[in-house]
Length: 275
Image (tube, rainbow, N blue to C red; front, side, top):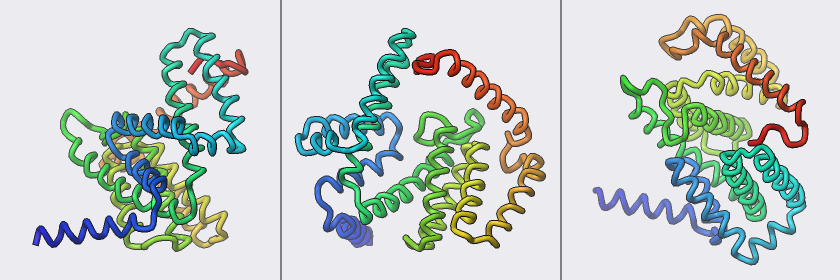
């Protein structure tokens, strides 16, 4: 039975990759790698970067991309800013940010409609493994699970993207409905373990906007009512999200952070304060 099950799984994976060229397989592996422990994700990003720069055909596609000139401008600003402010940690961030931009140009040169749907499927499946990790991390010492990501807030941001993409694909009937529903529910469970309040509200707001822009006004009205009820009652439901009782206080802190950031931006519009 185990042999048969493993063979069926292997055959399913083999059929899934059937018809894809080498570059498309690399893209799918990269999509799955987002949900690996962040150190491994970083290593995979570095591999994709060096491969994009060292393989001549890929490098030429990146340089010919119409957005490449904007990446160069961004590259220059990101390099000068931390040097001017002697922010060496920011210099390290500069390397990571620009690596992501270059890899994004590579992905654009390879991506097509069929491949992006497969990428979404792979990411949906891998996101559920992250929720399992989050479940196992919760203990007396760990109240907010980061899963495989750097911290719980990053995990919450990834969940937001996954849930909204799955919801959009359900609306447009672009994927298997049960698979999308299971992915959404499992990720929402992961969000409870991460206890990321902002991600929860972003998901509701994102779904609300989808209904509005797709002219589903009845669902838009229902979502609006749900949003109002959430604002009124959710702070009382601390057994669901323990930190929600301090939401107003946390919101004021974030407003102060944005205010201070804008003041710093006004002081040096071009170079800011360094990354």
